[in-house]
Amino acid sequence: MKILILTSSPNDNGLTSACAEAARQGVIDGRSPARLVDLNDLSISRCAVHNDGWGTCKSKHHCQLQDDFQSLQETIEQAEGYVFITPVYFGEPSEPMKAMIDRLRRCEATKDEGAGEKSILADKPMVLIAAAGGTGHGTLSCLEMMERFALRLKAKVFDTIPVTKNTRDYQLETIHDALAAMTAAPPIPELSPAKRKERRPTHRRRRRS
Image 1 (cartoon, one colour):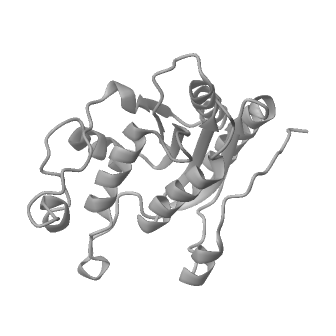
Image 2 (cartoon, helix red, strand yellow; image 1 turned 135 degrees about the horizontal axis):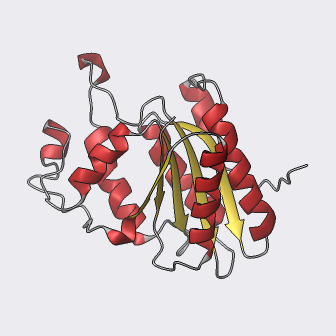
């Protein structure tokens, strides 16, 4: 299973980067290839809300604002599973992560399943990670935002993992184990709309035995 790890922190030695490395090692230990992309290395502007509020994202499912988003969308399509990792700012994902999420959602959520169109994330497993290296607050609200995005694009949320300075050591183990398990897991069955509404990120603290 080809796993794409998307991270979004400029701090190479911070908590978010440590989470990315734990995820990468978990994928490798699960005997799968991992590709790591830092959104801070790309030029992805926020959505410009073209024309009457919808540009080619709705009609052609690609963004008319030209930057690195187009190549990233292709990279996302080629992957078979995902890890989205973000630092937490004001209880939300980082600005680079939000810019990517906003634009990808507009392109993919507007596809018509009745016409045979399908989100590039559909039916693929995903782990969502929120790293709060400062106060430690806001991880759950951040994960809720990312989970809504993932479910809207029909991805299969395999796990949601909050990480703080206090939980760093054992949550890095959790991240590693989650990715090793995800790469070895059978396909996740589809949830009914009612069950999707019931899903909420929970603050779980797990250790490897």
